[in-house]
Image 1 (cartoon, one colour):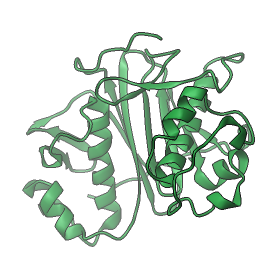
Image 2 (image 1 turned 180 degrees about the vertical axis):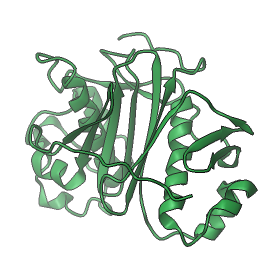
Image 3 (image 1 turned 90 degrees about the vertical axis):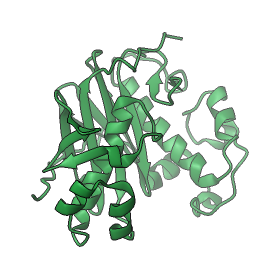
Image 4 (image 1 turned 135 degrees about the vertical axis):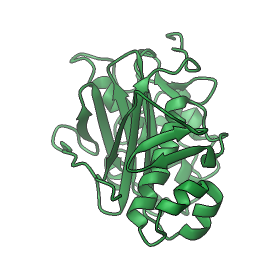
Length: 262
């Protein structure tokens, strides 16, 4: 069965270097192109080769405009590659933009902080009750924030890069999935791959779970350890050519407790 990629309207006008979009009622997305982020916040030619560059020891003075708190800059300086530093900061810009959109006179962007629960799931410190998910792939970072406090979300962004899909089907997909997936159908493969990862983020399990135990059957039906999962809202988007964005929303699982506000 072919995968349907939903259309997505992105507003690039209100925020420089960050586009906003609404996927469903209550779920907003922010997408940050890495090049736009660098031009606006770190316009240093030395960072142009950010995928292969050495990590930088950053200070607040390196930013063309405020973005990170001192504790966040200290966190960035612990990363072992410039690529990881840039991806992390672009994801923070996406999440903080969504946090600022909650109120007309919200906190300054440097006062908005993203923390992580014991399983690694992100949340806004000043609104830990609102479900947040962050992902990045190649040239983009994306964050999703839902306004329903009883909901959990997981999203995953992937670029369609060269892969041995036949090998991936054997190692990360069940035999049942393998029978319905054509290795030549790259779009369908990446749709299923991103849905698996988005669902694990929704659960808050991280990636310790075997991907073979999470099956995508038919178009977007999710089966967990042989049992179909009910009550989910599943979307597969193609925000840009050769990119797939999968989003899974549903009732907050019992394993995901609301962090205390800090």
